[in-house]
Structures are given as C-alpha cells and as structure tokens.
Image (cartoon, rainbow, N blue to C red; front, side, top):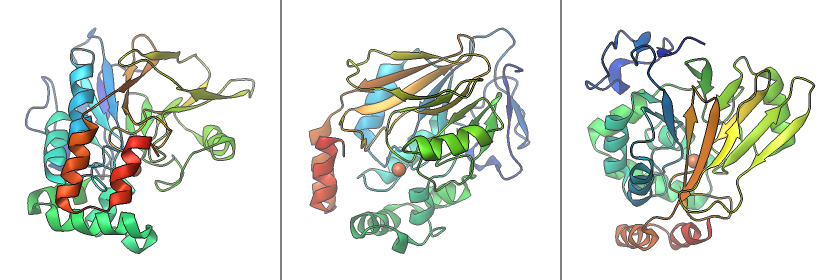
Length: 288
Ligand SMILES: [Fe+2]
C-alpha cells in the first residue's frame, strides 16, 4: 500500500474537492497526495448522517484530534431536519464523499416511489428544502466503489450501491468478490461488519454495548478480507440510539468503532417544527 495517495475515479469531479485540500494535493480529479511521507494517517468514517446536525456535531467533537481525513459513505440527507447545514459541513470537512440512495432520491436521480411512504414524505420535504447549490453538490457525488489508499468505499456493497449487507449470505458473496482487502460500507445503519480469513472462515464483527466514547478496536489481519460498517451517524437501526462512527488507522491496521450520545431531544424538536412524520421522529429514540 502506498501511503498518502488517494486514487479517484473518472466520475469524481472537482465539485467535492474543497479549496482547503491539504498540502501536496493535485486537484485534477485523479490523484490527491494528501499527506507528507511518514505522517500518521487516520480516516474518520462517517455514513448515513441523514441530515441530523446534532448527531454530526457530537461525532466530530468526540473525534477531535483523532483523525487526519474524513470519509463519507453517503446518505448525507433524508429523514432529518438539517439537510442544508449537514451538506455544507460535510462538504467542508471531506474531499472524499460518495453518494447514497437517499442523496440520489432527494436530487431526482432515484425514484422515491421505491421508498416506503414515510421515507418518501421525508425525501420530498428534503428536496423542497435544499438550496440549489446543495442540490447540485449532492447530484454531483460519485457512486461507489471508490478506491482510496488501498481500500474501497461503497454505500451499499461493492457489487451494488443499493444492496443491504445485513447477514452472512450477502456478506460472503461480497467478501469473496472484493478486489481490495478492506471495504467500508454503510446503508444498513448497523455498526460492525464481517471478515473472511485466508482459510475461508467467516466472522461477524459485532459492536454491542459500547461505552460512550470508548472504542471497540478490530485489528485488520493480513490476508483477511474485511467489510467495515461504521454505523449510522444520524439514524442508527441497530438498537442503539447513539450516533455511530469509526476511525480507520492505516498505520496501526485497525478500525476503532465508537458510539456517542447526542442531543436527541433537540433533533426531535426540529423535526416536529419542520412537520416531519411522527414515526420518523420517534424511531430515533429506539435506534430502529
Ligand atoms: Fe441510509
């Protein structure tokens, strides 16, 4: 693995490369040299923020000083009350963002008729709320897989950006088809992941009952394939209402999973003020 070089696909435009690109960057849409040689490289992995500004704030505060670059695995918007401020903050924070299905639906790239009625309602509300600039930014996001420093980012799965990797059947199919040893994925809103050993042993990575702000550390062993899900920042569905994120440490070859509480009542109050559907407001408290 060659440290500090980020390979960008042809589809990635300058739209999500901020002017604050680090020293050494080449913003020609192909390669960014994001770090001087020898620097420690830790990626903060955010996924499924879903326009929950309070949850995003808490993740960033908790992770302060613990990362060098920010990656976003899609679904910046949809469901939550802060589509514009979240889009603007993520755009400032990260040069490496891929699209999620809710991003696509909110900007007319996916028929929201495929969603359930509540998600469709929230999608249409979000579309009306987005500024033209944020709408165009979300519309410009590239699809996964995106190769970064020897690993890959996807929203759903390496095979299909809309696939849910929830259990062994989908996980094994993808682990066996992976062209990079580590794939970061989201979409399910379940923190954890899956691993396949060189001898073909399958293992689920579980993140139950993490202490606030205390990491679960998973070492990434040579020869293994890993699917890593940081969990959802803004709408967890794994039974834990707290915001989820992860840090990938390239030098230590490990992933650290975190959960942090956020101002849930404030998010819910903003959703009520916006007139978003009550079931979407209530589900946040249950992490479902
Ligand atoms: Fe999502």
